[in-house]
Image (tube, rainbow, N blue to C red):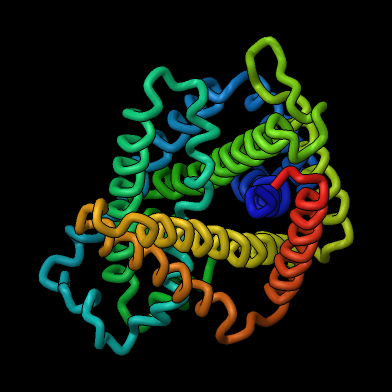
Length: 356
């Protein structure tokens, strides 16, 4: 839950505000303060979430569907233009330009941050036992295929040696690629898609965080008022807490230099990475413990999937800590460690009250 607050309320609000400032300056020559865009996002995410899970996820789905189109168009154009230059060599393990495997594992895991809240988010589903597995498998498969295809297209377009500098080293590398391959209108669409995608992701994280707070309050682990719902059945009090966190972060962003403002996203992502990977490690450890309790009744595939689910987050955790992040990401690591300490104190308090 804390990792979701770091991402939604903590990182994306300031980042979206900065993106909004750059977008309006580039296309409309209007100087929109970053904090105005950030506050509009925070309040907008709160309003959408208090309307209910179905409404919020519907908005997210529509945004994602529209924003995927220009990326696919650009990727297809890049592959077609490359012609004979298309190669499987970019996927080879011994590729000298392959990068850091552990960092890639961490990046891949963070793509699916928030999946552990599927149970809480699916309360409004008519058939959660059927819908949750289908939604998870379809989403993971679609996201993985889109990531691999678009990454391949960008690598082929920029070249394996220059891709990290000409694409990964800038914020709108894919938009510049679209402008060259298709036209300025495609670059506009991609920049707008990135902006609204960030907003949609923030909506999702705030929804998941508010649902997590609501679930803990309903179970007696947090103050009972946080379990209150409105006429839509949405956790209104929990959503207000997340909104309050976002407003505090925006206020803190006033003290961040303009040149480093977008980097607050990486600070919060580092904190989220540490917390989220540890959550997955503990979930996998719990699954292994259940296997060992009744080993003879378990299907063979679980003995493959569950250990793998333990190893992958551990490797990603290694990628988080080695090498030790530099500035400003090191502040995110410190914030994550502080959050772990606070969580530990909270668990101890619950145990003393007999709630754990």
